[in-house]
Length: 87
Image 1 (cartoon, rainbow, N blue to C red):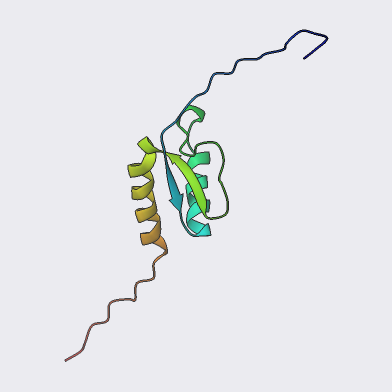
Image 2 (cartoon, rainbow, N blue to C red):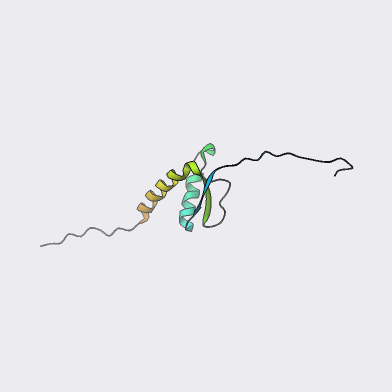
């Protein structure tokens, strides 16, 4: 109440579909990097990361994120060199 007058604001509420991802910290950092490398109108993360191990992404980006994480994990996974047996 402002001097006998009521003050009212109306706000538009926007709902966005998303997927909540819980992951380890390095994977979350990777998802954040993916988000930052995309154009402003094509971001992956909705709002901001929730905590160190949780992030909310757009539903439409889920398959892309899964594929990029799969590629990323292949590059950081150690594979022992192939050894030939001499007969």
